[in-house]
Image 1 (cartoon, rainbow, N blue to C red):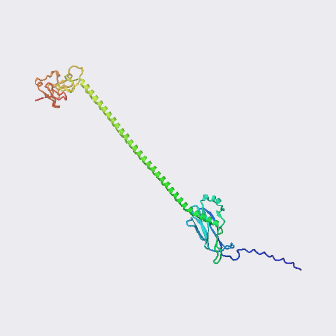
Image 2 (image 1 turned 90 degrees about the vertical axis):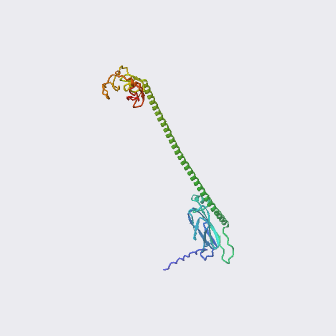
Image 3 (image 1 turned 180 degrees about the horizontal axis):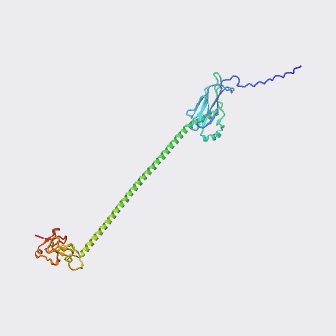
Length: 361
């Protein structure tokens, strides 16, 4: 039996050699990406620095990261950039260096409400980055020729200009912040002063109103007191005048009224109050004729109707016409032992108080 021929072996085409598969050269270029980063205060991002040889293959080497002095951000040895939450808006440079040469990238910090608008204005991608890197050529090893040059001197000048502008913007921003703070404090102090002034005016007005009301109340009370006093005085004066007029009228009436002794019917005028003949209290004169009482034949004192015997001498009373006076006594004066008034000898009793008169020595 004849065996079929075997198929020819499959020969794989050789893989193309990669330029970086072989040995690497010395570092000839330092590149950092991104060349610009837009951040909000408090955000972080990783800065990527790469060393490469003449063929563009990455090589190992030490890369240093340094933030500008006074920039509100930090960067560690691995390229982690951390902005402060209170960072003021502005552009700040981060220096990336290796082998004595350096390049810069720009970190632009913006307020959150301006972030989206600046993405479009600056021509950045959705992550806020400019993908093109910033690079610089490194010096050749000792013994080599040539001079290291920057790959992009125009960009370097632009970065330097932006760094200068950013360094100038920082003190200006601080100055504006200080001025704004001072203005706010001045406005707050002015408002507080105005409030205190208004409060003092209000307190002064309240005190003045209180004093005015108290004074008006005291004045009204004083006027009411004077008015009441005048009314009381006027009322008392009116009452006193009425009483005086009443007494005067009564006195005038009494003066006009005739008085008579109810015993002997002799008539007298005021101020006589008792009959000087029999000592009887006088009364208003009436039309009745004749005596209405009796007298004692010894003391000649008169008594009202109904009395028959003198209570002092026990003698039976008789009519006043039956009792006569002695001529000798009429020649001598008499005196009232009660009031001390003197009378002539014809009177037997005091006309004021009715006491029996006595002879003067």
